[in-house]
Every structure is written in structure tokens, then in C-alpha cells.
Length: 151
Image (cartoon, rainbow, N blue to C red; front, side):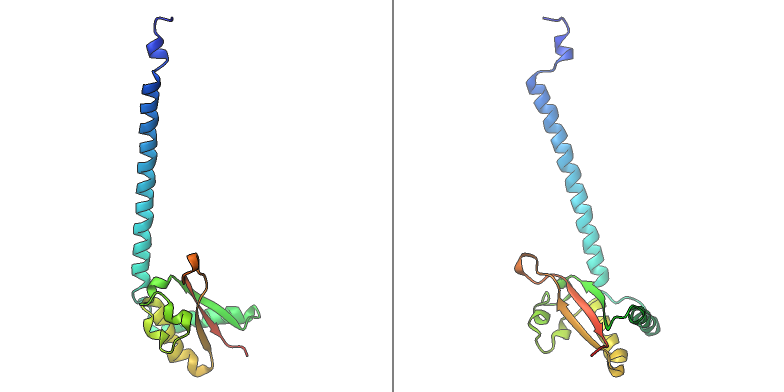
């Protein structure tokens, strides 16, 4: 047996310990990354759940820009926003069921968009629809907001 076998070849138990430490480091890094992503998601939802901070004039100009671009591309409707169902007080249930008064479940920016449509676009003949556009696990997921002007 070589004289320095212990320094050349660690025992199986030592290798297992090193592997376990490496796995623990990986798991710790994954947990930190997941926690950071979750915190970022919560911050974004909090931001989207609050008013945008734009003036009425800025909102109208933004809507006009989006609609004009869609018209130049030959469209008669355009999806102007997509948001997670948690921005509805009932997680999108009333929208999915097309219940009267569904708009009262909106919060934050989705509510602002509805109000902008109601105040400025509806009187000019535009229509709006809020529709659940995906169903992860069979439950309502994200909601899309579409402005329509065609027949």
C-alpha cells in the first residue's frame, strides 16, 4: 500500500460528507434564489395593485398611441394589458362568469384602465373586454384587457 494513501484517496465516508455539503450549498442557493424571485413578484404585484401615478392626459396619450399603432397594423382590436387574477378582489371569478358588476372587483392599474375606457373611450364608441386568458390547473389565471373598435 502506498505510504500517503490517506492524502491521495479520502475514505468513502469523507467523500459522502463532501458531497452532502455540496448538495446543501446548492439547496441553499436555490432557496435564496427562489426567495428573491418571490419577493420580486410580491413587489411587482403590490406596484400593479396601486394607481399608476400617470396623469389623465398621459393615460389618454398612451391609449391613443397604442390604438393608433394597432390601426396602422390593420387591427380592429388590441390587447392593452395582461395581469394576474390576484389583482381582482375575487381572483377573476366574476370576470370569468361574466357577472354584472364584475368591474367592481378590479384594483390598481386594471381598475384605472377600466376607468379610462369609461371616461374617454366608451363615449367615442370603443368597447372593452376583460377575459380570463389562461387556466393553470383548471383555475382562472391571467386576465387580458382588450380594446375593440371594429364591428
